Image 1 (cartoon, rainbow, N blue to C red):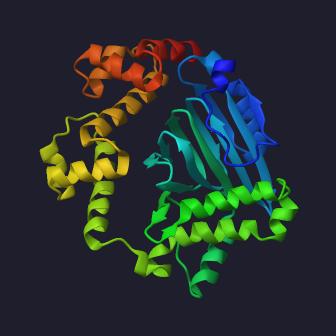
Image 2 (image 1 turned 90 degrees about the vertical axis):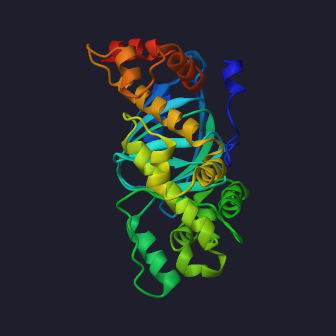
Length: 333
């Protein structure tokens, strides 16, 4: 148990009121109480080493939760618009209503509509806020003084760093202010922390209209836009062979520009990113195994022709061999 504690990243706020548990079932109950989620969690690796901490507060109807946990897989059925901000640890990769999204600490946040969210994550700390659609639209209209049109029906990845505007720092400061209010929702509402959250998140969604002078240069913006398109293509073709030539054609970028874009955005090469996405997809397939599923046919389905390398990559990423995942899935199914 002491070993599990050392793997946790710190909560961004609420350490005095935090609750810590060592069971994924207890975590499900915890998140049900805090956010009203119907969730299923599975520990990655040694389930005996799993642990999580959580602290929550409600500020004028806005539910804000700080959460930290060891590696898990998540399946959530959420009934409201939700904001996710990774704080520390590895990237958050998930599928929201079937659409692939990824967020990196200090770089991205996510505004997700109601519906199904399936994700895989290493040890990490994050902030989750449940928000009302009506108030989001009301806030956006007030900030623009016109009819602000926002798409709240699809997942939206939001940039936390926009040149002169550092939304990551702003939101972290707002979360720290919850501690200054002694995690008292009424005190936090009295100083307008809920409004600060709403306005900051709307500002990220409307940044092109609110802060045109802080927009990235056309060259950088074009590369990053091409990168998003390339990632979407990769996510839709994980069961096919994908070459750098093909990615050049899809993105309109040279290999060198692609290498630069992936390194800047994800901290790895395109080939490594593709491999990690295939590993995530393979794990999804193994977790949904039927009696005909084998490690070999799953590996081959996602272009891992060397089974030894597949097992090694899988172990490095998830802390267990693919055969262990398959065995666990069959016992549950």
